[in-house]
Length: 194
Image (cartoon, one colour):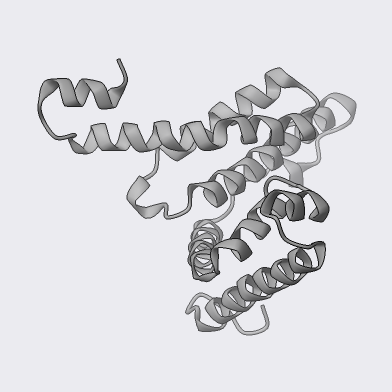
């Protein structure tokens, strides 16, 4: 019996936690396989890919889902961070094994609070920018950047020309870049000369 069937069988409306679980299940159904493939291409290991995908979903489940408008970009940003953290950890471990300690490398690699906040703000700006795009334009960007499909594969999937894929991709990238520049210019945290 699925979560929806359990809720219907009980005769009540889903509570907040039930809605949250249903949304997580729907997101997992849509993105889990893609994330595993994303990680497998980068790590070369199915086991590592599965573990990293589970870590990405664990991070998603820890946030307020009402604030995540587009779970795909959130998951792929999280995936990139997980890969970066993994590479950093391996680099630190390799350095400890192969040579004397470099004290600069012993400093906590976590970003400062301002950097973390700025990253979250930029992610929110990108989510908004993606929502402003027409559906096909948004689909082209997601398929190209996150699913790493070729322009020819995107054209075939969406039933448009490669030339149109290029135009949509340029339009989407320019739009997202412009929105980020506008947000950075308006940000009170922005320091002169940075």
